[in-house]
Length: 189
Length: 151
Image 1 (cartoon, each protein chain N blue to C red):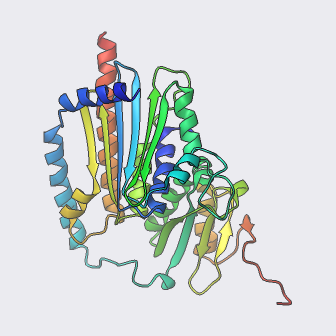
Image 2 (cartoon, rainbow over the protein chains, first blue to last red):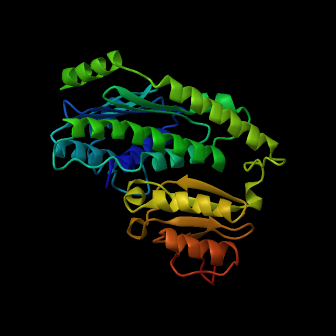
Image 3 (cartoon, rainbow over the protein chains, first blue to last red):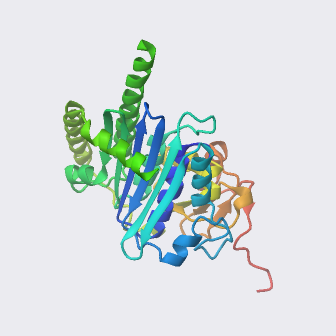
């Protein structure tokens, strides 16, 4: 995977496969500690203890069509390459929480990529699922909650092009704003 | 490690300053958008008769994502909308043709599904123009559901 946005898209596919109706994606960046935590949690059907043990094995998959399952192993690898860590908690019937911590100072740190494009695709193809995305960088936060948008829009589907444009615009400007803040701070130093 | 993570999270929750002004402005924008969309006379409900429409399924598993199916899918959804073609664009799991990702399955109304391989935005454009609009097959078909002549 080239960047974090692809990892998010990939991991969330697992949540959707597990029948989740709410998916929470949280990115927490700390410039001082040089750390980035990616946390994805869902309320899907979860895994039992045995599956959970095997989930980081690239040759374990729940699919019958193929023999490998690389999504989680690749995320784990990318996190660990930077000197970070990876954890996954799951309970049958409750849901799953995937958490990856990256050391952003490492040369192996992957870029964040186009988050807006990932969210656009996810929301566009699953307009009835509640997605919550929050990106927290030091003191600044960008939050997106599709349940809130759905409430506001009433009977208009979230899959409609104009709404998706609105969402990607909102994320693009929001994420740009918080990264600009940071560049400014570095220049001042 | 977990305690460090928690420490950072707690610190950030303490210092959380949501840009409230921004949020209010965005909600107002959203209401404007709603009015604009509602004033459109016809709001199509795509789920009502999917057999009547072009169905496009883009594979979206790890192998596909790594090969760029996100760009392909966003491109197809955008372009079909721009060119006023009634279509349902959905995502599907790995079809088992990982060597030919990104793969796209197109079903024209009343026809058998056709799977295309190596679909980048340029190929997607060709598929829309030639196959979806004109019904002419283009190169790059993966023979998934072919039938033998003696069957």
